[in-house]
Amino acid sequence: MSESIERVRMVDVTQKAETERQAVAKAKIKMKPATLELIRRGKLAKGDVLTVAQTAGIMAAKETPRLIPLCHPLLLTNVAVEFHLPENADFIEITASAKGVGKTGFEMEALVAVSAAALNIYDMCKGVDKGMTIEEVRLVKKSGGKSGTYIAEESKGNSKHGKIIAVCLSQEREGPKKPVNQGLLKEDYGFVGDAHAGSERQVSLLARETINKMLLALEGVNPDRMRSQGIKINPGDSAENLVTEGVDLISLPIGTRICIGEDVILEVTQIGKAFHRPGFYLLPLEGIFARVVHGGTVKAGDNLVIDDIR
Image (cartoon, rainbow, N blue to C red):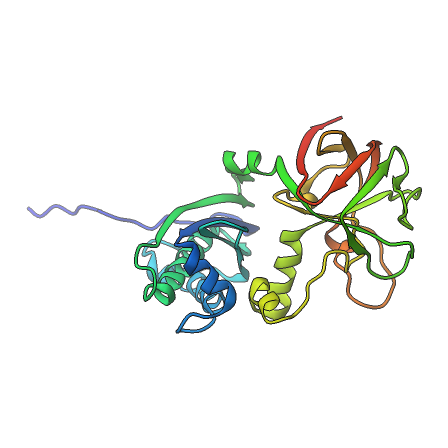
């Protein structure tokens, strides 16, 4: 008598409700610093590495059920693939988000996207660096569905520390601000010499990751390559006082305290703002505002630490 053995099966999601879902995954590809510099300058023989890798990641997410046999075909409403090239590093960090409405999650779509992007970077650079390694492919966040929101432990801690990339001031309330060597913050006032000091929004902050993300979305190319080709992306262009790196500013709750350098303490008072001037400015959409709890001098390179909510 023959015996029927079910070795694999697809999860039946017929009775599950459709909800809005999103997943975010990350990966790193390590390489020689010289290879990373070739990518920055757009000097690889096969062309624009990050544009091809970005496209490959998006395409791969849409093909996930063909690559992972037991995945359900899902209707993706958005896939985004971004790259972070830290200064003086030997790796590229890849982030992919997959979003849609469905009966099951988009974790595999995000993971496939970062994996395909990393593999394409390897393919386009292997002629000069066969020793590259793809590492730390992982899910960092997912939301939606019965199980709710998941955030990886590493992601909860990584956003606590960052640094100041630029300090920008202006004596005019309209238009961009100019980078300066350092600025003096006065308690419950703002930057001495800045037009917005003393207002309800004493200090404005914008993350460099946000600037790079928006440029990738608008231009479809790597911001570092844009710089190498003479296209200027200046701190202060969105009228922000401080440009930061390493902290997800927009996710900080109101009341969060930000410690800068040895003395300065800011307290978040507002996330974004209404905006009616012509032109495109990131600050109202992705920036935050803070009051000065304790003053002092701030300069580029200062460490930034997120304190507990008070």
